[in-house]
Amino acid sequence: MSNSKNNLDLFVSFVGDVRGKTKELQDFMSHNWFSLKKGRTKSIEHYFGEDKSQYVKVYSAGSSIATIWDNDFLLYVITQLRRAMDRGEDVRNGKFAFNAYDYFTFRNRELRDLRGKSKDSFEKKKNLASGQHYKDLWKSLERLHETHVKTNITAGGITYTHAFVWLPEIKKIEQDGRAIGIEVQVSDWLVKRVEEEKKLLTFDDAYFGLKGGLERWLFLFCRKSCGYQRQWREDLHSIWKKSASTSEFRKFKFDLKKIVAKGDLLDYSLLLEGDTLVINRVKSYVVSSDKHLRRSKRDTVASDKVAKQSMLTIFDILQKKLDLGG
Image (cartoon, rainbow, N blue to C red):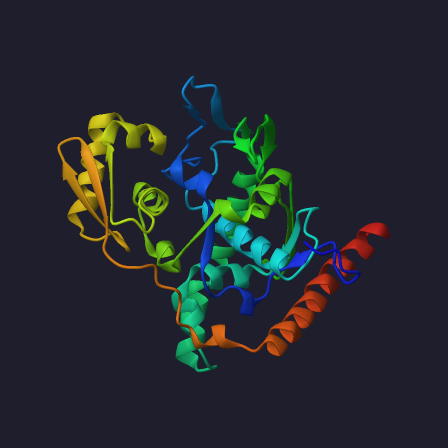
């Protein structure tokens, strides 16, 4: 990672950067770190390794740990982190500024596809990025801020213990009750994990269309376990434990059967053979064919510059007000 004199303290997202492959840490795929329900899950724990000495413990300082839907924001951050690193930006301090609408665009293909300024297009955009969406985003950030993680996972051949929260700091600027700019501090642990290129897997953003919590995690598990292999088989009890589901095994199996009955889970087909889940890869990973991915390098650099200037201006203004006491 270069240390160009042009590097900024903030790495800034922009609309043109949200298209393409979504990236996810394999750690999040093999074992679930999030609540699979939109309710109150206070904690989950995983123990693994031959002697069960390695662990992940997740607990909340608020009403619930972050959910699998809150993880959408971490997917956004991971993707932006990787791209910022690839552009040679120094992102080690983990400060990330973004526009809420850009985040909605990242996770909603339909919103990305809306073009023009017609009344119909405007109304659809309002429904897909309403005031409630902005409120829900802030609640997600609050849960990520209140969720504590303690782990001693091995990284780079070294085992170390680390306790952190996903987002140590969150702040927003509002105008007319709507967030026009948000800045978060990303955990140092997450930044360092993203730096390890081999720990990232990519997948299609159709994932964001999956509604159920278990369904979402199961796809991540399929992507990690089966990947580009033709098939993967695993005992349901093992998957149940990895999912950190709060349901009893019988209920977990019942819910999984309903997912299997729906047919293909994006790139994978699922089959139950007794208490064994058989995962078959039915198609190759498909990268978005959005024509806007084909922007020239010159256009990308220009968009970078404009976005950084506009977002940094927002936070510079806020900082000046704070320095002046209002």
